[in-house]
Image 1 (cartoon, rainbow, N blue to C red):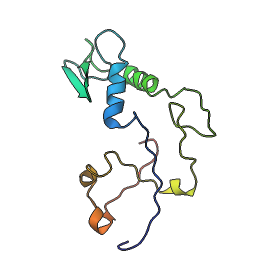
Image 2 (image 1 turned 135 degrees about the vertical axis):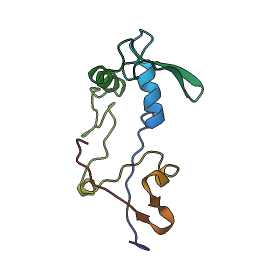
Image 3 (image 1 turned 90 degrees about the horizontal axis):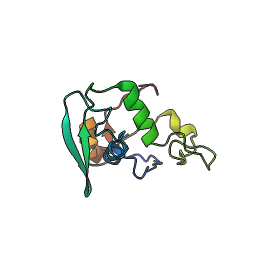
Amino acid sequence: MIMSYDYIFFSSYLHYGLLAARAVVLKSSNGNGYNNCMLEGYQGQYKYGSETFEASASPSGASYSKCKNDVVKSLKVDKACTHLKCSFGGIWNGGGGAGQKNLFVASFFFDMADEIRCHWLFAFCVTGKWKSSE
């Protein structure tokens, strides 16, 4: 609604944003000089901050299952949880609650908002609903 108020809870997962997570996954590559998430034939580098990471495909190309395993390992999904509820890496998940019925997730909150056709000036946003498995 225009000119209405909404309350927003947000959580920042330091070192797990889109660009940082990409660097973490590349950093934890299998030590063979390639990454299981890169498409066949790709050879390149990825720069994040002051670090540069090799981003080259394995000789057999990308493997969904191997890539998934690498990402799960990189995100430390199995790390012990010292809180009541955790998401990954032992990080508190925000606690849940009624606010999770309608959840808006964004990366690059302000500079990428235009990509999803959000018009912050008028508080109007084209939205969609997804299942958690998507």
